[in-house]
Length: 374
Image (cartoon, rainbow, N blue to C red):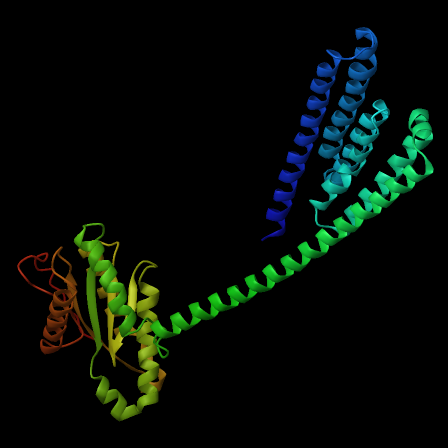
């Protein structure tokens, strides 16, 4: 996960926690109105002491928190922990006669665990201790009611909560470390799998797809073409007189020629076109988002570029290619697509080489005659 993504998620959680504080504020007011119906105190005294005054104090605390988070966003975690502490301090101070409400002081410790950081947990523990000490110092009723044993008990409970908090963080970090390790291992395995898949489908010499990849890709494209989702054209390209090149200049020179021809074909075709070495000196090109005329013009451009390129390994000589081009007709099938393109390639070879010949079944586009020579 990126740092910006993590930061955005943390801000979202802080916003949820602050909304939770507002909910606590509203619930406390609603609870006080409920107790108003059963209290023995005069209504005006109860409303003043237990509703208006604490509501005003908590409202100011929450508004201050909203403003502080907006202008001190880097410290919003500490602001929220402090806000929770002030809210619980206010509630326990007002209801000092209800000793069980002192346990609300541990609420900030629970909030700090959300951040999975030891320093924020330590801050929550310290500020909770300060809040408890302040209650003993400034609330006479609590001081009178709580014995030394009670204070010691609260201190022990604080330590227990703190220990639980540290235990949760330690376990969480352990799980996070394990998840990170598993994620990295899975990523490494995924990369390795992708690389192996690429190697299995790539011709090592020319860096084009290989014979196996051609058949896999063609099966998919033919299925789409049968549904008339896309146009599909196949060009089969064969280097002329390649055996003579190998016999005269050696196989290393022939390999250089293969790489050069493949490079020109890859550079000329688009990202949605498919170039593969079918075998030996034969290449196939699949066009998926072009009209027949555009595919024809492109293979002619490739043929002319190859014919115009000289090769140092051939003492500056040029090579040429012959090309057979066929347009797919829905229902034709993969085998027929290749068979007709191969027949057009054979015709290009037979009729003089260095030319593009279009397959001519009755259904294909009519005579786009093309030929060329060095």
